[in-house]
Every structure is written in structure tokens, then in C-alpha cells.
Image 1 (spheres, helix red, strand yellow):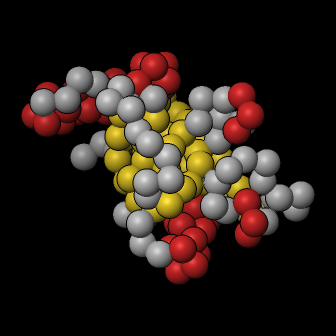
Image 2 (image 1 turned 30 degrees about the horizontal axis):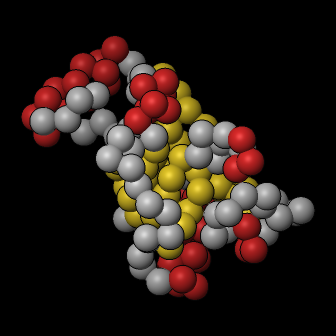
Length: 130
């Protein structure tokens, strides 16, 4: 199964740290830019309202990962790889990891032709446009 979003060991460790501090009900939203720096933001579930146009890409560390439908159209040919790094000056977004002195960031890679075909088949089976 091809995943649209994955996480590095550093990101998974930070998710667990946030889960132990804030509880299990977390969510990610891939920001589209402006004041939140195009970063994957981690929120408490319900802290951010999702639009019917938003797309759920999958889960990382058991936490759902969403982005806007318009942004998804731009990124649909790539796998998002969520990483975490030390942010000595703190994070300048609204994500839960900021006070921890850490920041999530998104890396990406293009899907291979084989992976793209597998995704198309997976999503057709789920009744999802992709």
C-alpha cells in the first residue's frame, strides 16, 4: 500500500511526546502558507475546523493528516514526508510543538509511475478521487 504521507523517526518521537503531554486526540493540517509558513501544524482535535473541501491524506503516528483540497491538487503527485527538528528560536506558528523548542517540517518526493498507478487503484477501490 502506497502512503500519501509518512513520518521520520524524529517526527514520530515528537508526536508521542505531544500525545503524552496533550492526550491522544491530535490532528495535523498542512498549512498553505502565509503566517504559518507552509508547515504541517499539529493541533488538538477540534481546535481547527475542517472544510468539506479538505482532504485527509492518511495518518502519521496514529494522528490524522489533512490539507486543503486546492493544495492537494498541487501536491497530489508527491509523497509528503513529515520530519521534526530542533527550533532554537521556537516555532512561529500555532502548532503544539512550538513550546517544545521543536518544529515539524514537510519534505516531499514524486511518486514513481508504479506508485501512482497503485494509488489510483487504491483510491478507486475506496471511492476517492485522487
